[in-house]
Structures are given as C-alpha cells and as structure tokens.
Image (cartoon, rainbow, N blue to C red):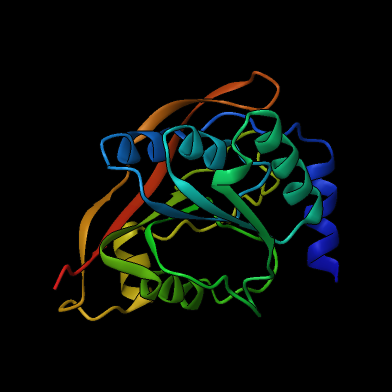
Length: 204
C-alpha cells in the first residue's frame, strides 16, 4: 500500500527510541502505572518512557520498520516483558484489550483516515476511569513532513465534537492549546502550538 510505503520510508531514517513527547510525560507522570496503548508509536520514545515507569504498553504502528526498531530498543533496555508491539493499519484493524491510558500523539497522516472513528474506538477501549490523551499539531513545525501552507488544525473542542462520545460515559477533562519551544530531529528549534485533548471514561 502507498500509505504503508510512505511510513516505512519515513521511519527508515529515524533512530530507535528517541525523546518522549513532553505532553505525554506531563500528563502521565503523576498517574499510577497500568496498561497503556500507544497509537502511532513510531520508533518508541513514548513506549519506552512509559515502560521504564512500570507501565505495560501495547505499541501500534503501520510501519514494520518502526515496530522492529521499537522491539529491539525495548529488549536492549531490559523492557521486553513490558512491551507488546503490533502492526496495524488503523483504518482497518485495531488492537484488542482494554487500557488505563490510550495515547494518540500527533496521529496525523497525509492519507485518508477516519480519525474520529479511530479515536472513538480508542475511547471505547478504556477501562473505567481511564484516559484518552490526544495531542495534535496546532501549528506547522519546520521539520514536519506536512508543509502545506493551507493546513487546517482542528481545535481540541472540534476534535472532541468529532469523536462524539456520550457525555454520560466520557468527559473532557482538558482541552487547550499550549505553546512550547520544540526541538526537531536534527536539533532545530521552533516555538510550536499543541492541541491537547484529554477524555476520561466514567468510573461508574
């Protein structure tokens, strides 16, 4: 598939592991370790960070290159028993199980994907009290694959509305657009905006 080939090429030039996404670290750091699902895990910076803190992580990506590098990195870090990595095209399949945390960090693609449906499925995979964390680009990073000057970035409120969850079963606990100084893969820096949405499943 064209989409798979695009992401395979994208990850061939990336080293395994990498830095944790800062908003995942901010939100997950105070949480008790449990089970986590990392959607679009890439080469595993978030997965490894969570596993080091005691989480059991299911990591998902469309690219075998990303999955293979993540598994090697997890083994080298002594974390293989805490990480399961699966290849999924989220347009057609979704990992099984239930989770205390589902993280979708920058789950953007230049190809057709019903992202709202994917995130709705992700919310349904939460255990009672679990969190769905969605972090999207709110501005174009200079090093992003997407340099479309006409790119539109939905607000957190628009993303939540698109998911369309029943407020009796899920509630929005955070929806904001913080700015931060970001560092790119080759050391570049830029001030960027992130669109942050945190949804919690009812504990009842």
